[in-house]
Length: 319
Image 1 (cartoon, helix red, strand yellow):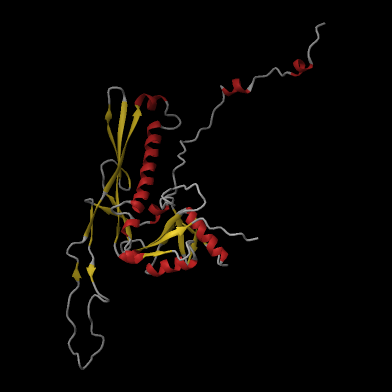
Image 2 (tube, helix red, strand yellow; image 1 turned 120 degrees about the vertical axis):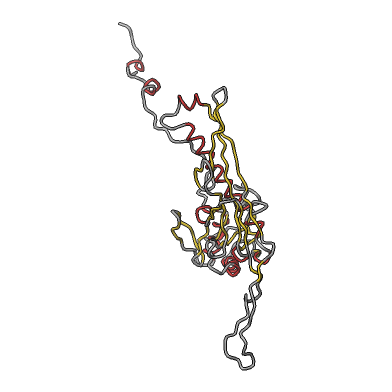
């Protein structure tokens, strides 16, 4: 009788997991794009549809009051004042700028490998998300129409101590006191303000808005975006760094900040975005042109304020 090792007797005669895997269904996700953000700015900013791609901001040249007026029957001044409201003769015109990209898709790949997810739709969907991310960045940072570059000097203040304190945000509110809509800040700046407020015994309350939860100050939400860079970076590696915090009033009716987009585009997919098939070449490569037309306008100087030189790296020991 042949002697068998104890380990041989314990070996199971069963199908292994590697072979079993060949018959198993795999639940798959859509492509996950880690750079995507909620893009709260473009959700909360009021947008204006343009029929021609041009937007002229007509402003009134006024003093303390647009017109003189008679408020009582003063015997020494019986005549009602006369006058008119003067307009700017050279108002600013905003021309929509384009953000474009081309997506190539092999039709053979799309034909053979589009279940359960359509390959063309997924490629175009990710490209559209990328363009929308760029749009939010341009609204803030564009050299021509970006909010950071177009805030006037009288609406800019610097943090008193470096950290974003409640006093600093109160000062910013004094610059945009006519129905301010929201603060806009890098997530690390939002966290830095929360630390400063908590240290002073006034931890900020929260508010539910547009499907998100935000901290607020004086009833105004602090909206996070990584497009307001820290030391010029979306994701700074160091613990310290400087950034800006914006306070925005939005809406045409409020003489605030408005986003602009082109209406009724051929191949219109969503607000200001067109997707066009450029053609299929002799090798079966389909080419799509994606174009997003956008800009932004500040209707009145006091619709936007900027808190500059904000330090995000101050922490405290609460022991």
